[in-house]
Length: 604
Image (cartoon, rainbow, N blue to C red; front, top):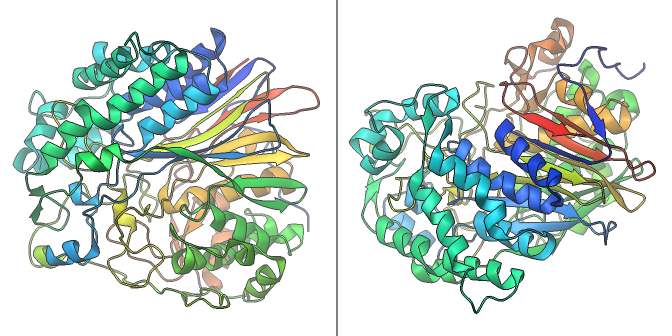
C-alpha cells in the first residue's frame, strides 16, 4: 500500500519567495505582519504587530487579558528552539478551598474566578525587546489604528455576541455597552471600534516616552511596568472585586489583585523536543499539552508508513488510537510540576504504548505506568450540569470559543507564523480573554481570561488548582528543525484539537511528501475520546470526528472498528497555518487554512 497522493487541486497556492512570509487566522493580522517586513522589520517585529491586531479583529477568540505561547528560533542561534512563555499563573488567592467554599465542583468556564494572571501582552513585549528591532509605538500603530478608527467586523464576532446577548444584557452590562452599543450585535462588515483599548495601548507607548528611558529596551521595559502596575492592573483588580455571574449559574467575585499583576513576568524556556524521521519537533514543556504531540509521534514512529496515512481507514484508526494514549498521559501526568518527560518520550515507553493499539477502537481511559508515579484519573463525565442550574436554564459563554467537539464551528483561538529572509522564524498561539470570558472592564475595553478552567478542584492531580501554578494550557505552537536549522513554523487554534490537527500536517508533509497547502487542505479528523480541557470537562468514549471528505469507505471502516463517528461536513476541521524555509536555497513558503474563509498567508 502506498501513501495517499494529494489532490492536484488546492484551495490556494503554497506561496513561495525569498523575502518574507506571514500567515495567520485573520487577513488583517497577516497583512499587518507583512507590512512590517516590507518596511524593514524582522520576523519578531512582524509577529508582535500582527498579534496585537488579532486582539482587535478577533476579540471573540483572544484578547489582551489572555495568554499566549510561542516557539521560535533566531538567525543567530538557529539550532536552539526557544519557548516564549506567556502563560500566567493562578492568583495568590485562587485556592482550591476558596472555590469549594463558593459551592463549585469545577473551576468556572466564564467569570473572573477562572482568570489566570494575564500574560500575553508582557510576553509579546518581551519578545519585541529582546529579538525585535522596531520601537514599540511603530509596532502598535496597526492595532491602535484598528481599535481607534475601526475595522469591518467579522460575521463570527456578531454571531458570538448574539449567542451571549442575554448574558450581556441581564448580567454583564459593561459587555453589552461595548459590544452591543445599539442594543444588538454588530452585523458583518459594520465598522466597530474599541477606543478604550486604543487608549490602553497608547498608554504603553507613552510610558516609554519618559526621558529616563534612554534606550529602546528601556522604553519597552517601561511599557511592561505600566502594564503590570498601572491602569490595567488597577482597573482589573477593582472591577472583578464586585460579584458577577459565572458559568456556575451563581455570582462570584474574582480574586486577582494588584500584587498578582505586579508579581508576574513572561519569560523564555527550553523547548521540549523529539526526533522524528530526520526532523526535530519542538514544543512547550508539560505545562502545556505540546509534549502529547511528541508522545503521539514517538508511538507512531514504530509503524510502517501505510499506518501513518490519515486518509486511509487503517491510518486514521492508528492515529486516533495513538492520540488517545498520549492524551491520557497528558491528563495523568502533565502540569506545572515535575513531569517525567524523559521517560514519557523514551523509545521503550513508546513501544509499550504502541503495543496497546489493536484492531478495535478503545473506549477506555488508558494512561501508562510511570515508575514511582501514581497516574491521576480525572472525573470521566459524559455530561455535566452545575448544581445551581439543575432544573433551570443554561448559561451561554462558557468554556472555550472553539470548534465544538462535534465539529460545529463556533470560533477558535488565534495563530500567527512569520519567517524572514535572515532565517528568524516564530510560531505563536495567542488566546484567552475572549469577549465572552467575563464582563468587560470598561476603562480597558477588554476582559480577563478563563484559563484556570483547565485546572481541577480534585486533590492529587498534576494540574490541581494551586496559587502561583500555571494551568496546563492547550496552546501549542510548533517549530520544526532539520540539520539544526528551523524549517517549519506551524500551528492551529482548536483547544484539545490543536495538536491533533497539527499531527496530520506533520505526517502528510514529512511522511507523505505533501506541500504545506496540500496538507492544510487535506481531510481532517480528531478524537473526542479524551477528557476535555475546558468547562464542563466531559468526554465521549470512543468518539471520533471526521470530515466527510475522508470518504464513505473510510468512515464505515472506522465505525466497524468501534469508533463512534461524528461527520462534521466537508470543510469544518482544522485552522492551520504554516511558514517554511529551505536553508539550502533560502526559499520561503507559506500556507493558510481555507475553512471559514478567514485565515490568510502573504509573502514574496
